[in-house]
Each structure stands twice: as C-alpha cells, then as structure tokens.
Length: 162
Image (cartoon, rainbow, N blue to C red; front, side, top):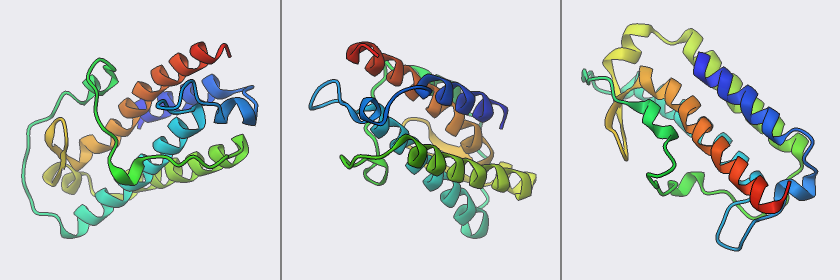
C-alpha cells in the first residue's frame, strides 16, 4: 500500500485550496473536471476492492506473471474508462469528494491487511491493458492509476489557470 499512500497524499496536496467551483469547472466540454477525475478515482478504487473480495471468494487459482503495472502512469497510452467508473456531471463539494475517497481508500487498506497473502498471489483478474493481473498486483495498481490521474489534474489546473 506504500504507492497507494504516496499517491493519495499527492492527490490531496494537488487539490488543496481549490474552491468547489474550481473543482467542478471543466477545461472544455469533452474534458473532465478535477471533480470528475476525483470521482473516477473513488469509483475505480471501490470497484477494484469489490472485485478483489469477490475473486478471493469465487476466483479460480491461476498463477500469472507480474505485470509492469507501474506503466499505468504513462498518459501517452490512452485507456477508455470502464462504464462503471465514468464520472457524472453533478456538482460535488470538496468535502464530499474527500470523504468518498477516504471511504474507498480505507476499504482497500482493510482488504489488504485482512486478505490471505497466498490467495492474493494465486488468483487473478483481467485488466484491459495488461491481461490477467494477480489480485496482489491489483492493490498497488490503484496507486499507479491514481498517480496517472494526478498528472491529468495538473494539466486541468494549468488549462484553467488554477
């Protein structure tokens, strides 16, 4: 969870001091606002946590090689967000976003702490870019995914002059 903690600290630092209006402002009609990026992050973190839990219960044993999940940070490679993680256009306040992010983050930390290490290594779930990824690697993937979107937040802030 080290990369996850680093990413979350960095995320919160980059949104600190932004007004609710700034968070919800889009740089253009076809781009996400900072709020939408944050929403995408908690939707993904919550879904990945649930998927890991489900796979620990019902997933098949299938040993897979470690994947280069750290490459998730590369924003040159475009990946379409899955439907369940596409953010809405509703206005959300900073406190609400931070509370939701804290909730999904706590859920992932609890799972990582309580899950059987051998089961996490022995079971896998497909990723659209990497193929089958062990459940153990899905946990730090969340952190790398967040670092990717922190770069996007920096871009949005710059475009909006924030």
